[in-house]
Image (cartoon, rainbow, N blue to C red):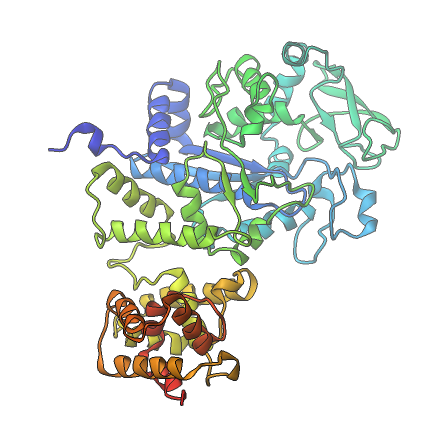
Length: 557
């Protein structure tokens, strides 16, 4: 029997799942909630613009935790909420100027920039979440605004207003100053804005708030000056963000919800305040990774070339656009393989990050299917678990026909971007099996398709080439060089080589002719692709097929 430590998964999601399960089992309130509605893994996003891939990190983290919980027998549900009752607070790129009139209005009540969507919030939220099936994210989608309208927050709103002085004391404790307004933002009955309102009195007996729609409360929107009173329930307004976050946990029954590390900063990050309010006002245990007394730690940023992304400022790669830079399977693998507390800095354009990521993925896949061996049992188990949690759809019964990303791009170019011809070249050179089922073909086509996208848009010049039909005059071969390359043609015609054997033949040939090897490779690349450098020559010749190279070399007279 294996030692206990070797039976336990080293993957971060399994470690979190185990901690969450233990927490539920040791807390009667959480046990009751989970028995009634399942173990809620929660996340939320304000749809203030194009949602970036950094938010996608949180979604994949929560989806992976929910998967890990289900794997140990817990009825886990991942719920993602659109915080569409937040106010529209900034004009963003691509929005018509007339949208300025809606600044201060809840996103749920702002028209969609495009037809076919319920509202502004729905447009940006669905733009991102429509990609969830492609990423293998299994989430229940909901609207925070709908929860307000349906009365789900009514109890929490009353508790917050009844304890407004205690909430103010919490703010003062962390911020060192008093918050003058009540913890509720009404929607103005006259102009429909929520970002400009100020609740200043709560009648606990009548359950009515008095409020003012201020003309100068914020710099980004102007209120109408209306003053009135109303019930705070059933969608009449919302709780301020930090209070709302704490209120969601008992309202929804959240057991696990992490967030970006900026929310967890001391002394007054939003998670710090929310934890205090959850514990002291709502008497509810804050979800993992927080406790009643500690905020815990959030996940690190996902940056592109070191730059942090922002939804409201329309900065960074949008989640819905991410598949223009890397396939869903590869992006999910990156997010699952990386511990949440490690920074991810990904640059698919200016560095070789994508090539290296494909190599990591391929290694994990080979280890999962036992094609590669790994003597360290912990490392092997970790790779296998990463593959399981990152795989989208059903895991195949056998390893797909694997070709490296750089090899795929090389063969595709050698085939003149003819996908079927590229597959035939791979078969002729024994890189893939002669017989392929439909899953194998799809796997290969996906990789070839993205290789083409990469060549067209992102690859540096060193990875681009065009196989020549004839030897160009600019190669400028002298008589000795012509004789050398004629001899290379004969060697290729009468021999069968591995890559290593052919590479050795190049040096043998140079020694025989007393020719500089560096100059040989330069001339060979000029003959084949009209460039002085290119892919590894032996692998390249074997990959595109010796016959095509022989045909080209035979033109040298």
